[in-house]
Amino acid sequence: MYILLFVRPARAQRFAQVRHCACFNLRKATRAVTQYYDEVLEPSGLRITQFSLLAVIRLLGTTSITQLADAAVMDRTTLARNLELLARERLVRIRPGSDGRVREVSLTRAARVKLDAAFPLWERAQAQMAERLGADRMERMSGDLAAAIAAAWSEPLPR
Image (cartoon, rainbow, N blue to C red):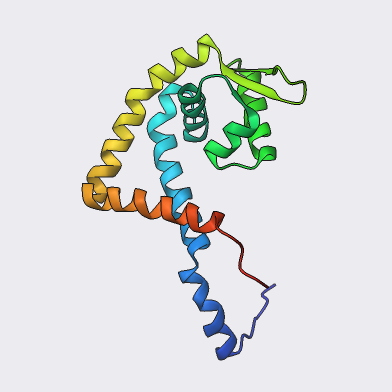
């Protein structure tokens, strides 16, 4: 069965603007780049989301879940789901902090070994992406993305 949709031209033109939506385009780019890095990292057994999160923990050292969420720009619910998977794989340790309300995350030895093994694969993906984009565009993109994060974190617009 076919459903025929009739969209008035003015409405179609209005919704065609979505192709210029910052969020829509960032999400499309994120999916494409994530798939690329996942493919390159596949021999390590880590996905880029896992690799990145483990790398942030390695940089921070033992850290609270709140600090990790801020550093990774992730909501706590999404971070908790990701950390549960990493804990099940024995790559992170989650323990109560000195304050009973705080939970702290640290890498296990297995995570350090896995991260060290995955790093050359990540370097290859990163170098290939830089080559494909060009060094100038890669640098501009990093700056533009940092600016997009800052803009999203600024005061919300009045309704």
